[in-house]
Amino acid sequence: MRELSEVYRAEYGRAVAVLTRLLGDLDLAEEAVQEAFTVAADRWPSDGMPPSPAGWIITTARRRAVDHLRRESARGAKEAEAARLHAPEPASEETDLLRLIFTCCHPALGREAQVALTLRLLGGLTTPEIARAFLVPEATMAQRIVRAKAKIRDAGIPYRVPEQAKLPDRLPPVLAVLYLIFNAGYAAGSGPDLVRDDLCAEAVRLSRMLAALMPDEPEVAGLLALQLLISARRPARTTVDGSLVRLADQDRSRWDAALVAEGQELVRACVRRGRPGPYQLQAAINAVHSAAARAEATDWPAILQLYDQLMALTPTPVVALNRAVAVAEVAGPAPALKIVEALALDRYHVFHAVRADLLARLGRADEARDAYKRAAQLTDNEVERAHLLAEAHR
Image (cartoon, rainbow, N blue to C red; front, side):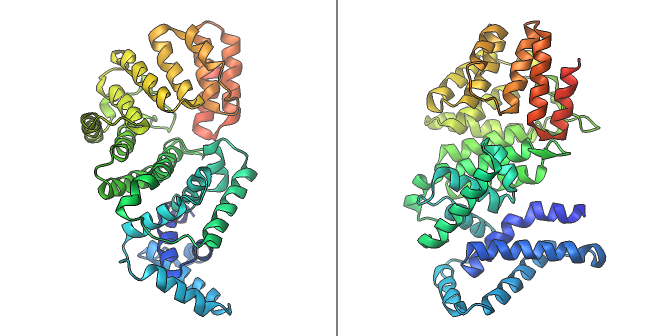
């Protein structure tokens, strides 16, 4: 039932956030929400979708959770703890979601666990999807999520938004969560669609809320700008039949001008603050792309300079891979290929796709074909796979 799948993607995180506030138990909240969606899968095909699907899910989940508590001898203690933790703060969708984000991103948890758990609970991503985002085996990610939830429970981590003075120190993992949720939506790890618009919209919505909560934090504005500038390209990213269109081949007149303007203004505001960070630099790179009316007019030297700054702050293999693309445009494919082939990213399909493009530009057609095929093997997204195989058979 496609409608149920859409409700799940849009409302899973909200439902878990609300139930966690009401129950004071993260595990019980997620279990209740999952049971509610199971009930919906059984009833909605025959009964029809209710007028308020999100409300139906939350109400059903709450009833399931109450039934569960009634069966437990510790019900009174659980309810008292829930009241103690959650009564002082007013209920609202924004507050519930921010509470859940900051709970999952508590300093007592490791960084990878923080990001993975929030992706699971806020984005509703499956464990395989999160594993692909982290480029780790599914079993490793499943274990990481279970341990993170146990840590929250056993350590009694409170379910609340931190005090204003503590927000800056708690910010980096929250930004990483929103960044990965957006990426998981804009480049869907699996399935028939290239983009999961619901995840992109959720990441942007959460980033807007965070920007309202922390208006003086330039990295929050930078992340929002990055998401907006990339989202602006969405209408031109696929053909009518859903096939992928590379950035260089996109019809830029189809880009969302309002999102481009908003993103560029946020970047300009970040520059005026003079406190550059990784998300601001990535936003600036995309602002340069968005300023070119045609791909041929792109200011690649400026992009390469920004990537140099980004590498100084976050010298990761993925940043180096993206920088190599700019190197190819400024200095040619040969030096770029030398950079790429030194990177340990064999399980990352984009690595093989970039390498294939560089090999093709150097006239090494057989090697390029093999690299494209390897890239196609490593992606579970049907649109990306079709594109890569088409490139391999040119």
